[in-house]
Length: 172
Image 1 (cartoon, rainbow, N blue to C red):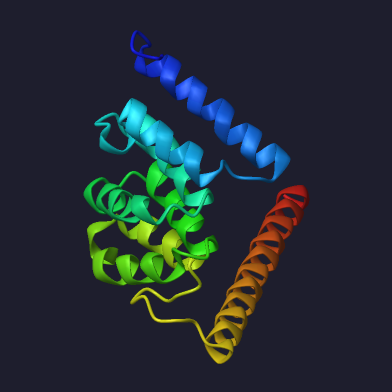
Image 2: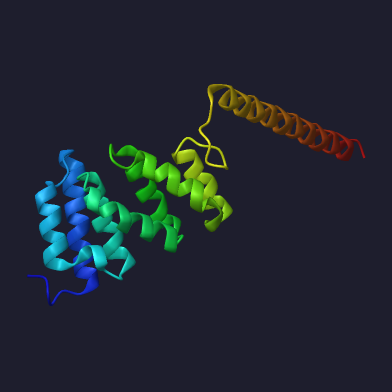
């Protein structure tokens, strides 16, 4: 029983389970997740650190019953520390890809603009939540090449000015 454990101890316990599952590349059995949910009430936990870790374990196990809990969690608190890994986990799961996409489309304006941009990138969608097409990703690449060329030109220009200033100082 973990009745007397602090939230830090529970967090550590769940971290160990998450690490173990990742290391062995095998999620917990669905039965195990269900027992943990029932015995410890992790799905109803108010502590974000505990709920986050339990949601990661449950999503990895493809627990359909955790979907409403995860959606509620990622749409009520916007810390990227929690939101981004859970969206990624949902998106990578068989059961949660469409849930992740629809939840992002509906709630993208709730998140800080940087978080929203990072989530869009993780989910392979644009800022509106629409799938990125190959042609739009090519234009993004061209835009970044253009930006790189401008930055290179500015750097060369600044270097030329600095060298010119040094030459003029030596002459005087």
